[in-house]
Length: 402
Length: 215
Image (cartoon, rainbow over all chains, first blue to last red; front, side, top):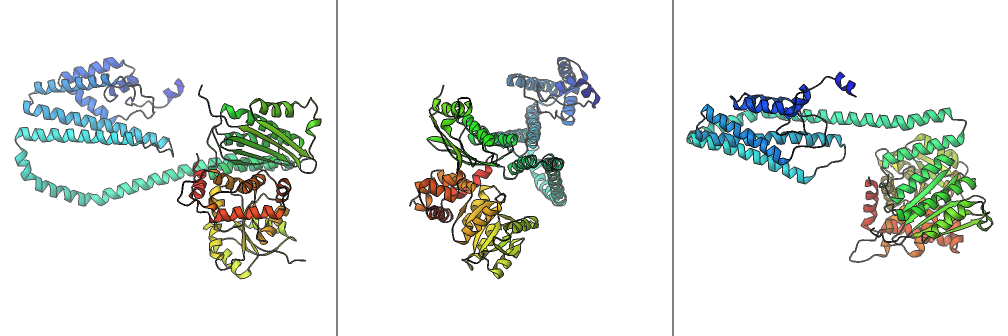
C-alpha cells in the first residue's frame, strides 16, 4: 500500500478534512511532511509582515485542486473555522491599516474580500458535489435542501462583493462619475456578449456532447462486461458440457435469470419475502438441476415472523426436487393482508404422507411441526395421479415492537 | 374431422419462427410468417388466419400495435401473445390491446398447440405467470372512485380459479379441484380476461409500471 503510494507521482492537494480555511496548510503539510501548525503559523506571520502570506495562500487556493477522494468530513468544529477566518480578516485589516489604506476604503474592501471568500469556498463545495453525483451513478441525490443552501451561499457571497464594491465607490466619491460611465460600459458589455456569445454557446454544447459520448462509452463497457461475464462464459461452459443435458439446462437457466434481472430490473426489493423466495428457488434449481416455475403475488418485508414459512417452503421444495423425479416444480406464494400462503406442487408419482416412516424427518418435523409451532398450518396432498402438493399457511401477526 | 387451425407467426427472430413452426407441424397449419409490424399487418390481412401467434417485442414497436391495426377490421382473428418477456407491463399491455392469452416460449409443443386451439375457440389462455400478474394487480385495493365498477374486482370464484392456475394447475385439474366442468373454468377465465381488458382501473397500469420501477 505504502509502496504503491510512493510509486505514483505525489501530487499536492488541498485537504477536504481537517481544514481551517481552504485546506491549503493541511495539504501542504501532507505533501511536505511538515507539521501543519508550523505551516499555519508561517502563513500568519507572513501575512502580518507585509502581506506576502495572503498572496501565497490565495495562489495555493486557486491553483491546487482538492483531494479527489471523498473522505469523511472530519473538519474542526465550525467555531474553529470561524476563528480562523476571523483571524485572517483581522490580520488583513491590520495590514491594510499599516499600508495606509484610507479608513473609508478599509471596510468596503473587507466586505468584498469576505464575500469573495464565501464564493470561493462554495465553488469548492459545488465541485465536490458534482463529483459525488458522478460517482453515485444513476442515483440522483439532488437534495433540494443542499441545493437551496448552495444558492443562498452564492447569493450571499455575491451581494457581499457587490456591497463592498459599491461602498468603496461611494467612499471614494466616484459613484457619480461611474454613473456617467454606466451607459458606455453597458454597450461595451453587450457588444462583448454579441461577439463571444456564439463561441461560448458552441463551447458549452461541445462540452455536453463530449460528456454524452463519454457516458455512452462507459455504459457500453459496462454492458460488454456483463455480456462477457454472463453470456459468453455460460456459452463457453455449455460448449464444454454439451454431453450433459442436465448441466446445460442448469447453466442456461442461470443465465436466463441473470439476463432477465438486468433487462426488466425485476429484482424485487431487498429483504422482501419475494426476494428471499426467488433466491431460494434459484439455489434449488442450481443444486437439483430442475426448473421451478415460481409465481408470487404481493410482497412484504421479510421479518423473523416469516422465517418459519420460508424454511418450511425450502424443505418442501427440496423434497419435491429430490423425490418427484420431475424436471419442473410449481411454487406459488401469495402474501395477503392476513396470511401468507405457499404451495409447492410436483407431478411426480406421489406418496402416502401417513406411511412416511419416522426416519423421514423432513416432512413431519421440518414442515408440519414447524408450521404448527408458529401458529401456521401445513397440509400435504399426494395422489399417484396428480402428484404431490404441499400447502403452507402462516397468519400474519401484527409486528410487536420489542 | 374439423379443419386445422390456421396460424400466422409474428416474431422477429427467424430461428424462433422456424422452431415454433417445426414444433407445431401436423398440429396446426402455419399459413404465414412475419418479422415486423408492417409485414405482420400485411400478412394477416391477406391470409386471414384464425390465430396470430404474436411476439410481445418486435423491432420498431410492440405486439399491441399489430392488434390495434388488425382487430377493428378483422374482429374474428384471435391473438395469442408468445414471449420470453417477463415484464408485467408489457404482458398487461398486449392483453389489454386484445390478445386472448399469454404463454412463454418455454411452453411445450403440445401445450402450445392446445393453447392455440383454445384461443381459436374463443377462450382465454392464462399461463401461471399471467395468472400471478393478474392476481397481483387486482389484489391492491382499488382507489376510491365515484362509481365502483364490477370490472374493478375479481369475484371470489375467479380468484380461486386464478390461484389454481398460478399454482400450476391445468384447466382440467382446476375443474376437478373445484368440482365444476372445464367449461365453467373457461367461463371464469374469459370473464377475468374481459375485466382485464375493459377495466379502466388505473391501478392496473400504475401497478404494472411501478413493478418495473422497483429497485
